[in-house]
Structure formats: C-alpha cells, structure tokens
Image (tube, rainbow, N blue to C red):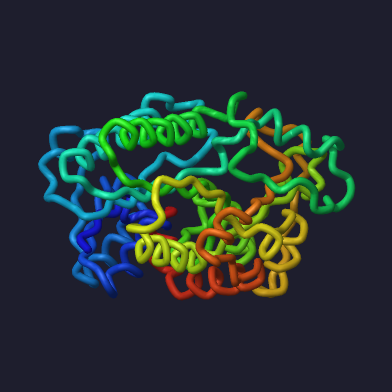
Length: 340
C-alpha cells in the first residue's frame, strides 16, 4: 500500500512510518515546527521516507499531494494547556487539517486511520469517578472508560477539536462512502519520545530523573496519587498493522485503546520506577492546585477492540520505562541540543 502519515516526524507518527516502511510505501507530512522533530526527520530520511514539509491546514498544498491508499492522521497540537492559550493554532492544525485530509481522501478514495484522543471524554464525568479531590491514598481500580462514555460536556479545546474531527470523519463516510477507523488513545509512551512535557509525563519523568532535575506533584493535594494507564508505542504499532491487514473486512468503527490494567501507574509509583531504572533520586514540590483541564484518573476499557481484533497490550509500565530510558540515553546528545 501507499501510505501517508500526517505528523510523521512526531513521536507516534515517526514510529508508525518506520514500522510500516518494512511492508509498505510510506510518506510523511510534517512542518517540522518543533525542534525535536528534526531528530525523527533524519531517521526517516535515513530510511528513505520522504517528508512533505508544510502545514496540514494549507489546503492548496494538501490537495496537490499524490494519491494514497491510506492516510494515518497523527498530526495534532496535542498539549491540552496550549489549546487554551493558542486556540487558532489548535483549531487550524487539529480540525482544519482533518478537513483537508478528508477532502483529499474523498477525491482519491483513500482509507483513513484517525489517531484520536481519550480527551474527547467529559472532564466533569471523569472527575465524578474519584470523589476524594486530594487523593491522599493510592487509587484502587474503578470504572474503566469505553466508547459509550459521556463526550458532551467540556473536554478542553484540544479534546473538542479531536471530537469534532471524529464527527466530521463520520459525516464524510456517510455522505461519500469513505472507509475509516478511529482509535481513541490515552497516554502513549516509549522510544523516540523526547522527555518534554508536551509529549507525555512518562518520558518527562524519566528524563528528569536521568538529568537529576526536580519535578512537582501538581494538583489533587500534591500527593502524586493520580492514576493513568499508559500504552507502549510497540503495542499501538502492532494494533495498526492488524487494522491495516483487516481493513477490507473491519472498518467504520471507533475504538478506545490504552494500557488498561496491563499498564498503568500513579505519579508516585512512576517515581519509584524511575529511581530504580536510573539510579537517581530527585526532589518533588507539592503543588495543590492544578489546571481546569486536569483529570485525576483514566483507565481504558479495551474490551471492544480486544473482541474485534483479538488484540490487547503486551507491555507493562516497567517495560515502557526501561525501553524509553534506553532510547533517551542513546540519543542524549541530540536531545540536549534540542532543549537548550
């Protein structure tokens, strides 16, 4: 197949490009606006993967791209807080970009895999799961979140653009017969993640422990007990390969995808893992207040996607920490350059 990966020089996109290159003809679209994306751009170039360098919301340039059998949309301004500070940028990239992608797919009859987000879910409803807002004790596993969870109430501008993109994909499918798959992913981590806040808390935690830089437990009393599941990037790659292989039989479906009970952690537990792997300890400040967009808990219900594809995550949080740490120290010189 001829495949285009938007956001192809980002963490998820670059991993997908390099993985699919083994069996398919793969191209990337990325404006290379982030300093760290140049590292992944070089890796793609080494593997003879061409990158189209322009903004995804540039409709004229997008329309002139060659025809693709499949477009995997990983392009997004993913930092939730950025979505409140720079609304135009988030809407242009996340929503207008998807609109351009859909117009191109309609013209070429391309299939679509859309990497959506767990952030499409209602913040208020997630907050109702955890009653203790200071979370003084370790959270026990509670309700897991599936495709039927409430998406109507506030979810952040970032979450809104991802949810609106999902709806737009469904409308194009209904009107023009496009075939799509939507994967609502939670936290994804692993090799090729740069240890920066906007890419995820796991790599940030590991990188700060490695470089002996202090951090803060933010929100919910500053106790570090808030809990998330985390999906290893290799488990996501395995899923996408299965989805591509079965696309002619299974399409026009929406899935929640995450580490679930196989791979989850609190911030406090992640600190312990990072100390074990790096051999370093750092200091933590307690910051009791947090963003209006923050949530205390998220655990994915994978039952729908497991039933459909016989897929489930294989790697746990310790695998993720070890694999990410190994990659970070192997690429530390380049990473430090991008962060200075």
